[in-house]
Image 1 (cartoon, rainbow, N blue to C red):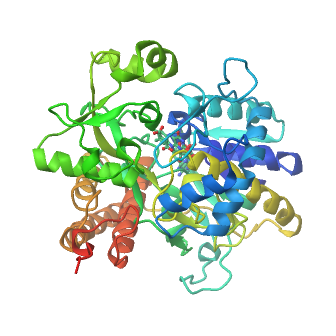
Image 2: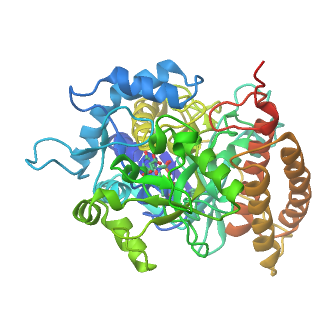
Length: 523
Ligand code: FAD
Ligand code: SIN
């Protein structure tokens, strides 16, 4: 089938939905999403969204905290723009129907604090903020007559001059996006979507690693598509590991224990019940995430233990049960009463700071292709994202991208000469194990060699192992009918390759990139 739409959006998380709602008054919008519309990292966000809403805080402080967490390599202008726009974007979320908790009088927003923040500035909805945001935006999008949401449609590749038979390299000037090819997961048919403007809002790539807080859909599809289309990507060495995921080995994804719990007073402890963060940073359990995750990793390696503890008992029973109902219920379901027991935790891959390089308007290096949310790289996060700045970045850049796209579509025709996908001569791969086992191998390699602490040797090992996996998978791809699992595996391999490549090129320990071979010797 062939479709023509003004605005094509790939992804129905906070970034895709915010963009869709903004452009919908100006043309037909089609949102493709590979699972159920509500599934994505957005709905699992717990802590909340950072913004300066009152005079007790200031833009300067939020800017300063963001720059410090980013370890000196954020784009300062982007940081200033994003943080100053935040209050307006929050007010829009409220207008779309999103509820944030308010104080006892109902006048002001109730604000939480998280690691790296010098003030209480996290707007939240109990400890399930993302679920509330996704609900509000999805309901608003479903009400809009110009927005069509198509579930179980898996975008495979963006369409460029390459599909018209031209040779496209990284150096080809003026690469253009004409839409995407997408697999209908129910019929296995590959459709052609032509669009005037395409927005990638495909989320993160946490599933490159064996332990991650991100849902199974986070397989770096947008980044991999832009890589194949020869677009510009950046900062992928900065994978953020959240310090505290619930230790419950059989569970995937790993359940997050929000940093807001530490903001409310919970402290990290070793297996003997002793605090240890004083050895690493004066901000103790509320130091930025990279420092806390490395400290936990080091303590686990020293003691040989699989997990440490987060002690929330000092917060008090009422506050814990009322303020953190999701975490309380989850832990209780596996026999841990957080009002009486310490919580077993370990770090997990959580957020990709890098991605598709975009300008202030959210436009990528490929013409008419925009990116927003976790798949993009705006310059806001630098070497390490400050907690609760990603939902903020998603709404700010969805807004900027929408303003630009509305203008752009006026002069863009559909590229009707684009051919349909050619699947001639392909056979169905009947051995799923070829895909599932390769994915497991890949995730273990990345966890063990390209994780929180790296070294030249570990990166080299990972690269060599990946080469073999890459060749085997490309061979499978070249003779098989394309399926969602095979496509995701290719994307995970591409993302892993890019992470390793960028990690090897970064010859200084900055933010989340930490290599034993780059520790500066004191003279
Ligand atoms: P997502 O919400 O992940 O949505 C991606 C969408 O793209 C999905 O609809 C998916 O189906 C679709 N998609 C992907 N690939 C394809 C494809 N090939 N074809 C079609 N559709 C596709 N950030 C904060 O700021 N504050 C928090 O408190 C916070 N807590 C978090 C807690 C957890 C457990 C996790 C995992 C993350 C948290 N984050 C938090 C990070 C934040 O939630 C994410 O960065 C953000 O929600 C990403 O939004 P998004 O719209 O970019 O992507
Ligand atoms: C958390 O609630 O700890 C996660 C916040 C974030 O990832 O920004």
